[in-house]
Length: 106
Image (cartoon, rainbow, N blue to C red):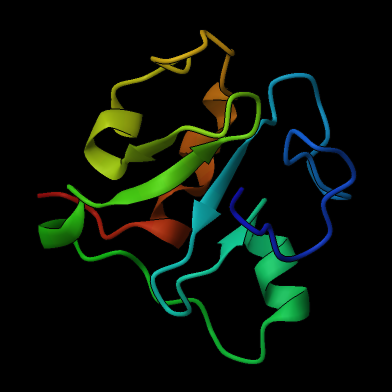
């Protein structure tokens, strides 16, 4: 099982910042190759600034479903509302934080 850094509060990767029913993903941060539940957990624990995933690397697995633990590529995740493996619903509002994790596509 992948180690989740930061401040998870349950086994489905919810954290002290985002712990609603659909807050069930962790993101592998490009800067440190560690999974965190959210950018706030990374900011509070890591000793370095966030580096966003470059768009040329969106085919790499960097999204972890907290329910079934399947890893997804960034490209796949961008087109998902639910996990393609277990059907767990993902938080649509994560789109608001997209620019914190990933380079903008033009």
